[in-house]
Image (cartoon, rainbow, N blue to C red; front, side, top):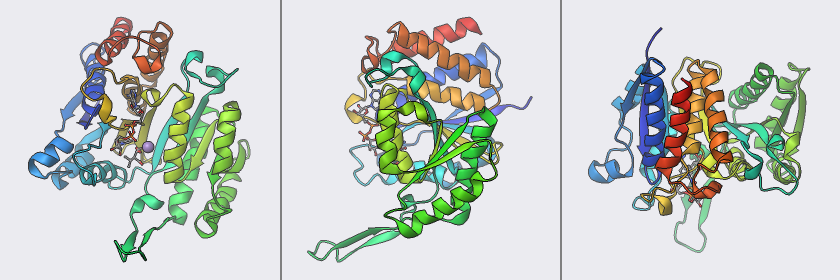
Length: 357
Ligand code: NAD
Ligand code: IPM
Ligand code: MN
């Protein structure tokens, strides 16, 4: 079959080290399992930006879009770049530039030990959030007026299009149908954001009629946050706008053992042959950088999502099972109750995976 080229961007802070561990896992799949993967490391991030002003060059964007099946990204954000210009150029350059409208973020606990809620376990935390990834307040529409005066006004507009809302809602239902999930819940704030979010309500009501076998539900996003803590077992597939998806998935990460356990995919859901981008949900965690303590499992589970996307779903299952075993045996970093460093925890998982291949 055809070879798959994968661009790798470590980025900033803990990004390069967790991405390096994930890359070593991809190398095992290439060298031991014979998967037709070509790995292409890109030197992008704060260091590069501070060195020569480069953020995300057009020719790289074009090459990635033309040649790559996937991108593996670590994290972006560095205290030396307070305006985060490079981070936005690279991260949004892919999410918006490649039209990766579905940010798929599983909230799945791999062990009872990781669930912080009293009386709850892993069986209660297993949902997938579909975060709209190309619209909302993230489009950057707005401005600052009378800046620096007492009359200053600052505005960010919440942009929602019929097509944009419909395709993410549909992606959530299609995913539910494909994976045998029975419930889809859409969360908005249509009680306060009348114009922008009434569109979500209306589109959700239309699309759900096409999926009568799936139970659909609407919640205001504040109530969703409450219920995710009170009883997360009621949720299977969630769909919401860009900003709410960002916030709800950090809340979700807390239910699965922290940001060190949360993986994600950015895809053009209706056409999986287009380049997709895979990244842990966490950021660059500057205080943890360079100390060999960051949890590499979010990045490793992200590789699992990538392998499913590329056509090897059994490998995601395998990676998940091995990471769960690492958690069970405390072969993990301190944030999830282990004693190992970043490198040793990742090596433990790689050795197990390699033995099975
Ligand atoms: P963060 O995700 O970097 O950290 C939040 C908390 O989670 C911190 O306590 C951190 O120590 C912990 N944490 C995160 N990843 C971890 C891991 N792998 N192992 C163990 N603990 C982990 O969020 P922040 O501190 O708000 O942001 C830091 C920088 O990262 C900012 O510049 C922010 O803009 C950026 N950021 C980037 C992305 C991305 O690249 N997609 C995502 C989120 C934040
Ligand atoms: C994420 C991050 C980004 C977002 C930041 C870095 C702009 O929080 O990927 O979750 O808000 O999308
Ligand atoms: Mn976030």
